[in-house]
Length: 354
Image 1 (spheres, helix red, strand yellow):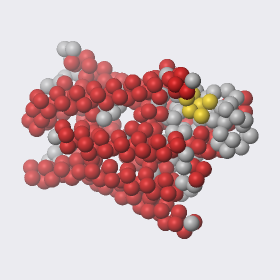
Image 2 (cartoon, one colour):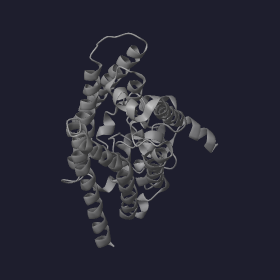
Image 3 (tube, helix red, strand yellow):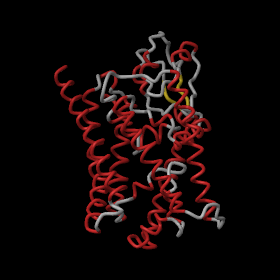
Image 4 (tube, rainbow, N blue to C red):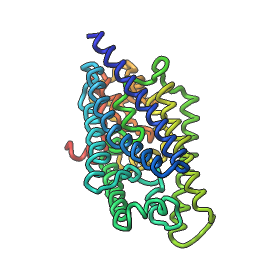
């Protein structure tokens, strides 16, 4: 049994390495070389990137979910962890496979994360943006309208779901940027070295980064909103669009993967702009970890299991709920608690349970 688990963990790590290497190579070609490449080469690169983002990514999520379930011991194969993996598989099949086929648009993944994470939908509304200029000849007015309607549908699903189920809804069930990887590849982190836990100083730094990146994201959002209502602050719209792409590639995509290699799976979640907003919405939804279902035995397993380094144990000893906006609702603390004194809840979930 131990040999089988070791083989499956090795397979999961190889899968994650493959995912990272392919992403860096293909993204580098797509965002770097494609703009200056011959037309035929540029089309091939674009097709490869879309195939990777949609079909290969979905395949990685399904395969990694199966491996992770097999690696986890019986105590960890609880309903919350299974729901996380099931949610991500369904989300990938809908966003990356079914929707592109039905709507005939391979780039719908641009519209699968609400504001303020990306301003691509706002840019698609502005004829001054390079994103609109590039996509209009390919999609036409009908294609642009379809993409925006898809985006509004996703926003409704995310925000309405968050008000009912807290930050768990997006960050641990349907997020196809970092949330999915943090769950489906969970046993594989970090790829180099031993498993780590964020220390207090690191958490403080990441907390500062959270508000910096949230401010930056709101700046880009405000820029395009103001432009759309007819006010021009800075006329070089193409430069603003490029700056956001550079931010995405360096401080988000590459940094997220660096965390996977040497640190923790949820590293980016500490400062994700959308996560910050949903954390605040989670407060409105009454999101919390209930700690007094039975009795805390002070084993500290909940703190060790939490990927967001939230102090759960001390609250559990007192029987007080945990309400940190860092909580992504993954349920790892709930899964690992030997006395089952922990449970995840929101005002809506509390109401329905009654």
